[in-house]
Length: 384
Ligand SMILES: *Cc1c(COP(=O)(O)O)cnc(C)c1O
Image 1: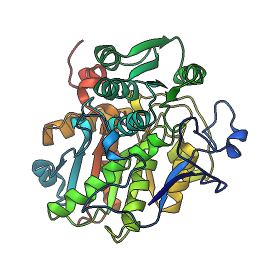
Image 2 (image 1 turned 90 degrees about the horizontal axis):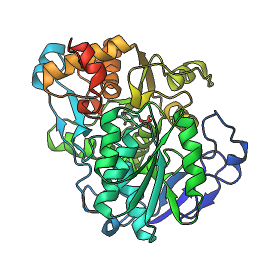
Image 3 (image 1 turned 135 degrees about the horizontal axis):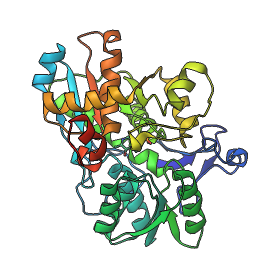
Image 4 (image 1 turned 180 degrees about the vertical axis):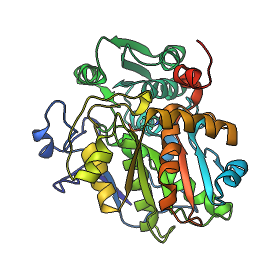
């Protein structure tokens, strides 16, 4: 099995090694305030030597830090199913990851890559969850983590960063400013960047959820997934999830690609709008769902191509629909997800009339509700 980076835009190939992030050729057209061009994809060729349900990854297992990332529950929410009249609805509960979000899957792979190449420090910009995640995994691995976080990040996510012992650099500005500052910092010798989309391993790490969905549906007699709803901001999770299903088709573990839906907040819906209109148009973001609130989706171009290629869908929901779905999900299933994740459920509720009643539907719940209680507090009528 041979691994390399490949540019989906021009086809150029590069070795997977430190210092390599974007395609040399296509990244020349990068402009500030635009989705990244030349985002690389991890590709493998040849016959993988895999056991049963192993996941092909570009870093060997021995380098993964000792912390239980992934293998999160795939639930059958019986009461919710009855309420909706849908017997084939599943919840993929990534609130159970060590730092409480899906981001741990990417941090885990980036950390393993750093260990493999003897790199002791990782830097990143984040709106919150990527930072708390990298800090958590870095603590398990014994790596120094330097985080550039806008001051507006929810307090629980900032406290997580400090709790795990990462170095916190608060940024007086937006995520875009933090992104630039973190890159300037990590250009300093020997520091690996975990900036989302920019480091291709952040996409590849996020495919592991798809492998678990397929494995756990089969174990529970659920067949193959027909629809998967993914909360989407920068478009890294959704691109990774689609990449996972591509791998699963290539390996013959599923017969067809499921329809993957990008669920976005109306106030931050660049990818959904681009899927409908054919090209990007950017507006300042405005939503209570902080993890999916982006002005410019960093991985927008790559995610849009993948959605188009596989006939994916997109749905945008209002903040009110997100908060209503957050409460409904908690009360009908016992799962408390943060607003971004509730957006995936709200998106499903909005388009469910388009989905045949016997189709297998998976909702990806990517972050714990305890990470951002401000908006939830308002929705349940509590003061803070
Ligand atoms: C980051 C994040 C998302 C969105 O992922 P993107 O790759 O930015 O699209 C969704 N939910 C949670 C909890 C997140 O932390």
